Image 1: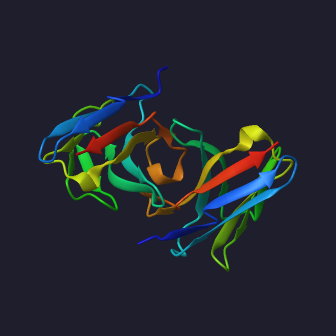
Image 2 (image 1 turned 45 degrees about the vertical axis):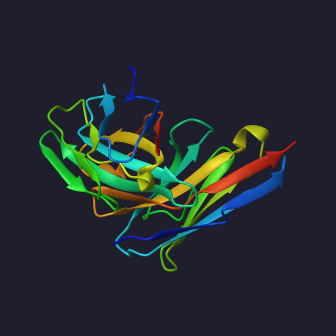
Length: 111
Length: 115
């Protein structure tokens, strides 16, 4: 089955700095890679996703890059703000019906 | 739209008790799923359903049962609770036709403690 590894498990940055979270996946057939943000006491929410026909996708301060050869993808957050503090999850599908999540990264942005 | 709703928000059980976690969505989504979230383990898929009357196992199905009699509801049953089932449970839904390839809409979660 699909295995998704995520690093680091915790990340602390100063406000205004950049943050990068990396994930690797095992199933070479996977071609959809979403990122979810979970704020305290809430369910995860999709913030950005990428499909395998592109190498990079940006949405304002967040971007995701994909390297299919190496089977890894990364989330980049620039100009971090305190409201970016949350737990972030990457995910990859195992067939069309199972979405497998990484173990999560707790991001803390200090003012 | 209320989106995905879950009840209860909190529950404490004794070992061996049974209970049902409720999940409902009003978005007419065909695909629904249950995840559990444990520290350091991320979100692990328990069971999923691609439509009414159709369910299948995820990564960690043991100790849990599901059924899908309507498009809106997808309850998760614990027949005999164990301390290892202490966790936060999330229900999610998405559009049909390849549910794992579409945005998942998560409920607010149920925090379950088994003593």
